[in-house]
Length: 219
Image (tube, rainbow, N blue to C red; front, side, top):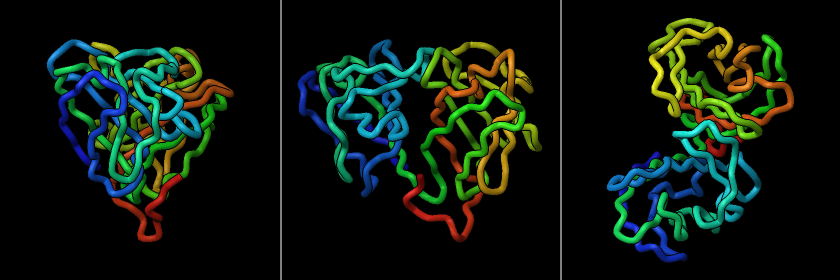
């Protein structure tokens, strides 16, 4: 995981060093000196999410969008490339980027909802302490859950990055935190956020403690 600040120049082909030593799995970018969207890109969005311009907005319930002004080239093990969007590279804009690699402690991935309280099991190879998830197929809120506000299953102390709502305990958006992954338990009426049958969801999970046998490349 790395935190990087940079100044935009408004031109395609600009880049910044992310310092991870491997290709990032997830990147979150926010402009600091102007009101803009939080840009979130994950390798789980497509085979080439950066080159394809795939993105989500951390402050919006919108499904996945595509805009090659936001991203248009895959990062390397050292650099993230920028284009001309004001969200990521306005001339004179100051930015912060949160960059995540898949490791035994961090996983960026996806799962398919099944609409059941016996939800899809997502294998992480570690017990999560924090999960953020988002429906990429349809409009839905971002969900953020952790093991400090919810100290036992079901994990359901829910907040959303795109809403100003207070925290709420919501069984319809609940998740089981398991020793090696997590399982969605939420169903209607709020299952569009977490577990609609056939919809694709991305997640970013951070471990409480990794298994000794966890690998460093993730899935």
